[in-house]
Length: 294
Image (cartoon, rainbow, N blue to C red; front, side):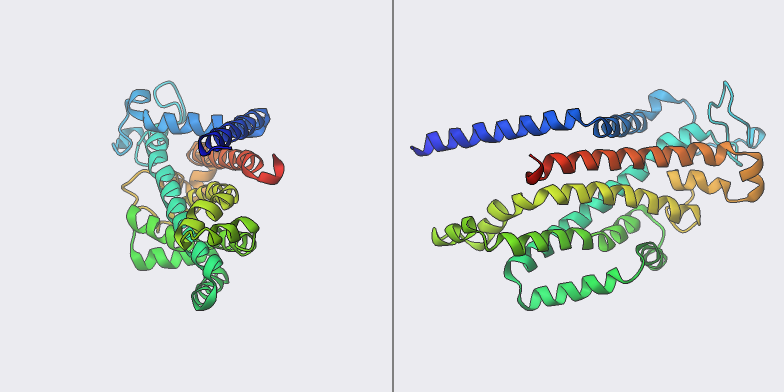
């Protein structure tokens, strides 16, 4: 078989597997529901200026704590700001923080996992000790302490999430590398004189990406919840910037919870719905990207 024929056969097989995976994803109703939820909420946040005319930061003391109605479909908060507009604009920041933190953690996890899983040695021993040290501390508590040290800003929170979000991906990649580095295709690659970087990134790493992508979705959902929790207690994103956590922060007082339930029902439902959609989507991806499931 010529090189061109082999390449053509490989492309046909890749196309067949991709089509088969896509068909399987489409048949997963929960995964499709999750994708629909994520898409609808994200598009609403992106096109917020076309959906609502209210400024999410505009204060109107004459309209404080107005219940949902024709003018404010989700009511107003304690400063007279429109809750619906704050949810839309706040979603931009919350989703950005979740995605950025998860992406940063994924990159670090892949880098350290590949390095330690393929070469082992003293570098592996050192990184695994650091990961174990960070893992024994509850992640929410660790994030809280680091945010207090770094300061309240979007950039600092993304940095903190990146610093604390690489451990699960690192363990996944490292474990897969320990298994795959002894496979015959890796030995054959070494025999043909391929370098370590080529073997790691072209031959071993693609076989690890399934669980990594699933972990990315889980981290995204987790970081959105963590940002909401930190902002709810007042140490997350500065309160001047609308986020889902800062919106629900307005319902910290007992009197607000009992007498103005729309201030926590709408943001709480939005956060829960989006996180649920991300988890459904991640489960669908796991079934598609896991080679043993094909």
